[in-house]
Length: 235
Length: 235
DNA sequence: GCGGTCATTTCAATGAGTGAAAGTTTACTC
DNA sequence: GAGTAAACTTTCACTCATTGAAATGACCGC
Image (tube, rainbow over all chains, first blue to last red; front, side):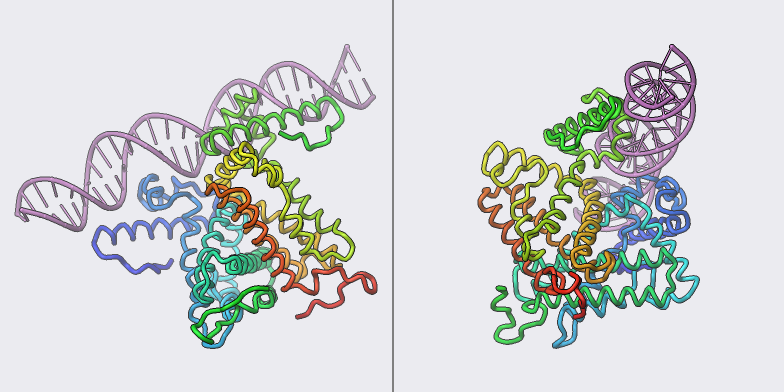
């Protein structure tokens, strides 16, 4: 499993980060092998050779052990907006990113074409899919994603994050992103062949982002005239 | 508290329904008075004079005790689509419904202008707002709402529920509906005066639905030409 | 009225999550 | 380099949600 965090200074910090990572990795492994609900925190703690309390010191809940990578994913998404090529619209950039972006524990489309990788990914999604508690926490996740999107969109258009237009656009994008997840999840769990999964995902993302673009001609493209601000977003 | 369910036949059935209602009512009352997390299921059972197990026989989880009315609300929303006036677009109908629709334990805007009602509603929202577990379950709720919207939209346009366009449109609507809730919640909890709350909600709903309309010119209006089906939804 | 069905209860567990106190390790100061 | 404070962990003891099995008693069709 990855160590995507830059190691912090200080031995204590480093040890702490290592402990955290070890717990997260072992937990992920166990969840994938046996399903979220069939693994107890006690077992995770046991396997990671720490006390149960330590697990809860690092993670606010059992669910967080599973959702540990979300920050990474969000950064990739908002990054695609901020770093897009000159003249490219937001929805285009996002569509490209979402058509390609690897999902946690996935690793891009190629992984899906490999039977090994597909099986792993299927286990991952099934785990995710089948636990109500995980599904529940997913909303909090989307809330955060919406916030980051608002920030990115606001910055891009030179509007406040809580501008109605920005809020609506972000909400729609979150909706499409969720649809994408739903599509992948349903298809992979139904053992649909990789090529078809990819096709479906691309279709949803394309349709979704095209619709967002149509709804937001005013915010979708960077207005580089004047001082880089959109001067009016009225309908 | 309401008894919105038609009483079923048979004494046993009726007793069961009464028990359920009693539990739900008492639970709601207690949650409102003391907050979701500060009330235990044991206390609810105690107050309703039933065993804890009985509570769980009627409600799958503590959260369901709070979300008991969601079916009602969803029905009002999808009903607004199906029953809209001839020639009215879906987004118009929905915007009207959402600008007005009473929220659970609310009772329309008038209730907000009454200090008593406002305080009650504020307690309700704060309860809802402050409990992570409730927020969590909210996603499942939205999932169901999306499903019902897909059904309504699909039926309206003569498309399959799982048509990409239908799915995207439903997802966007759920996004706007959630934004509306967020707006109400934030404003009411911040003790914003009722008139201003109403204004903000109407603004979000209007903007949101206008954008959805713009994104979906093909599905928004009933195409009564020919056999009532939209023949093409290509972009 | 009889036997079964069904809501409910009691009992006994499992497992998540928390607060406090105490131990251990690391970082900072003089 | 000792001494102290701060940061991590652990242990302990507890609360609470949630569930299965078995028992009770009111209700329903016959």
